Length: 177
Image 1 (cartoon, rainbow, N blue to C red):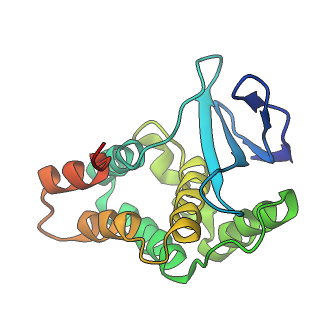
Image 2: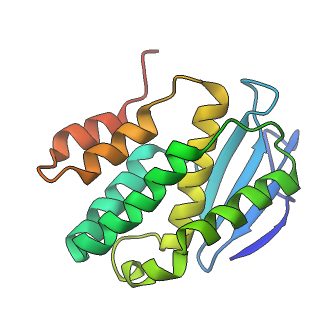
């Protein structure tokens, strides 16, 4: 993974990325959000395809695919991610250095290399998935002190008697319009 200062713009050029995380096939962009002073907007794209807003359903389905390939290692990975969720705190700054440090420290803490065998399963590699999930977790906690969706999905994925329909329903929930 390469970390660089943001150059991508969205909203007709009015928002420039704060930071970009570059992987082999994907780029994750982080922009200033609108919900609070330190809110972030996360976007990503694969190769030359269009830029997308990640949803919980995207990573949840990928984790389910990894579970099919190697359940024990995936559960260890999820436990490491769950620890990130449990210890993550709202952002007190969303500048380049803060976001870079958040990801680099977390990557060392979970020892991401231990999980590289999971790259054989699903769409996303574990390093991309980690960065995406860490950013989604901190985004949730920055905007809502009572946030729970991310943590709830991980708990459901870790259950021995997983209910795939409940997981997909929770991960796909978008609220009322």
